[in-house]
Image (cartoon, rainbow, N blue to C red):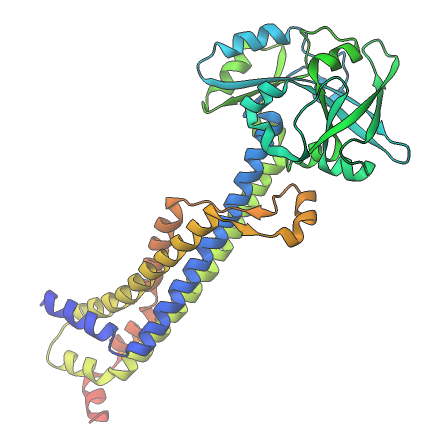
Amino acid sequence: MYSLILKLAFNNAFLRLSRTLLVIIMIAVSMSMMLSIQGLYDGMTLNMIDKTKRSDSGEISIYAQGYRLSKELADSIKDASSIQEALMTETRIDAVAVRLKAEGLSSTARKSAFSTIIGIDLDKEERFGRFSEFLKEGELTLGRRGVLLGSELAKSLKVRIGSKVIFSTQDSSGEINAMALKVKGIVQTNNISLDASAIYVDKMKLHKFLGMPEETATQIAIRTTSPGLSESLLAEYKSLDVKSFLELYPMIRQMQDMMVIFNSITFFIVMLVVFIGIMGVMYVSILDRIREFGIMKSIGLSYRLIRLQILLEALFVGLVGYALGALLGYGALSYLVHVGLDLSAFAEGMESFGMSSVIHADIKLSYFTSTFIAITGASLLSVILPLRKIKTMNAIEVTKAET
């Protein structure tokens, strides 16, 4: 009996082929669009997180107590060199970058802007976060007077490669000091704060300019894949300020939460469309075959078996739509992962918000598993109203009326 019910369900699901195909295509297109949007938003967020970690904080950053509030050179890490050596012996750490920062004023003959001068070691920054990938124009070199400027700061100062920039600030003794710099390159990290204010110079040169001992630093950034490392460093360096990436960038956490909410709303809308589409097809299909169901009930076929047939019909439609949608969605996501969505026409506006002009998507298995569960659930729920129609009908009257 069950094999007969299964065969009937399959045949009846595609009895009105054009109508069923229309619903299947609707499910597939809606699902593929939803997967593409979800993958793009997740990819955009992951790209921002990756570039922020590579350009600044890593997974963990260490500061002296009070530095993040005061930004004073006096609140620097005094023994940064020995801490760096100790960290490099830790097997859970992939790379370490030690930086020296100072707030000041950068100016040209016509423009000036508040900025942050950052002393770096280019070789270590390359190992830490592939710094060369941030170079937008010019060359990646510092030299005696060379400097790399953040892209938005370069726009504010209206400078280009080869331009002269004067940077002035207080040194460690409290005296106002200034130095002339030549722009060697312009970098774009998609980290809003860095692109708008960063001036990169050689770290040893900045130590001399500020009158700071070579073993001092204002930040020690760490790359790691170990989730428990932050707690270990907190216990080991109690006198220092050890912060994880999300503690330093709470806006990223809020953005992730907003993306989850947005994706959930999109998901709900698509599933509602699937639910209405399948319910409409099943309801019309049952009305077309109401006499058939009346005869089935008249000859003694139980409502339980009729219900099973209807449920199977809805499942066949939903699962075929899911299969086609998963195929289209995977194809679209694969394209967006490797090629990306080019929004170069809006590049200037997107870069000012820390986003790349080419957005690459992300693919997760959870996209497809959650959609499978939702479409299966929507398919089963969509037959509640049609089943109610069958359950409440009078089999004899329906049979006579249709005769």
